[in-house]
Image (cartoon, rainbow, N blue to C red; front, side, top):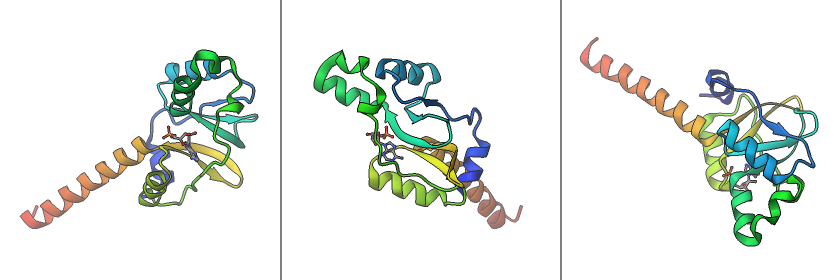
Length: 144
Ligand code: AMP
């Protein structure tokens, strides 16, 4: 299974971004309202400048307290983004996320961001693929 099959099959596949300079508290509100775990920081919605995940916010809240909520996302976001391509395999993405200990990845095509994929999307897609394979094999064995 390839990444483009997962982002196409996912309902609500729009990319949630905030612009640089957005306050961390406002980004946290976006995460809560959209029920997502990370937001891409981008000026134009196409070129990602960084990613801010709930982990970045919680880590800084634990270290420095609520003062971080008034700071721009630029101070907390991860700039060194690992991305994937639409024709990357789901298993490869899963391996990269596991090795890098992160759960989100922008999907890039021709230098533009065309989607974002989370570890939950990949796991759900793989589970449904495995269930279909199991049914097909069971059918073959039972002669259905
Ligand atoms: P997550 O597991 O996605 O909530 O993120 C865990 C940490 O990895 C946070 O510091 C994020 O900013 C960072 N992170 C999330 N996604 C990526 C990515 N695709 N590339 C690099 N760092 C990331």
